[in-house]
Length: 273
Image 1 (tube, rainbow, N blue to C red):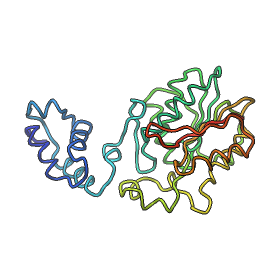
Image 2 (cartoon, rainbow, N blue to C red):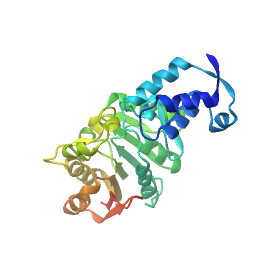
Image 3 (spheres, helix red, strand yellow):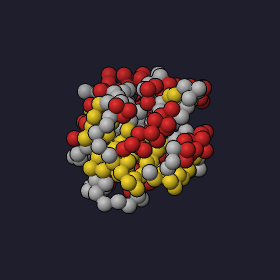
Image 4 (cartoon, rainbow, N blue to C red):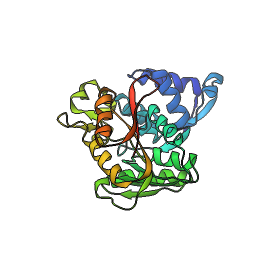
């Protein structure tokens, strides 16, 4: 550790970074990884700094590694969630899933989150609907470990299970929620390097020949595992809104609704069993 003036540290970060939004990234990195706030920088306080760690982090940022993975966490619904290369980094638009589920009025609901990743959806629902019983599935052992860690840190109870949901036949639910893989392989060219190189492809991509494979499977699963008058809510590919809606209509669901996110893109489907 070495004493360094805060403004000098900030200027050093800017000089070293070769990425977009370098100032905002530097502020977040310094605050969340080193405890150096914007106020410290403005006041130019003299602070302890692990210079080797900071240089390592700046070098990683220049490879386009996501800041969230470097500092080890992100925020979702204003709560801190640990993340790693084994889970998808939660997106702001996914927060709207929580509001859609909360709007479905049912007493003491049983909820299952399919493809839970970091557990951000399941844990947020458990915290915001305290009377709910929440389960969450993922095929990835490492993802389940991260999700369990997040539940412990956020002091809530979720039943996490490592399994393929098609093989999970334990009970029925009032609400099924999922943010499954939905980006077509052909859309990779639109994706940034920090997503393609550092986030799990398993959680992102589907084959162009059958881009709705997970929604067809979810519809089938929901038909067999939703309680009477149950509800399913899924995040979708904005390019395939009507096609995804048709999957649920053709499977016999009622009140199938296509909903836009705050970017005015088709982003969610809700339906009743």
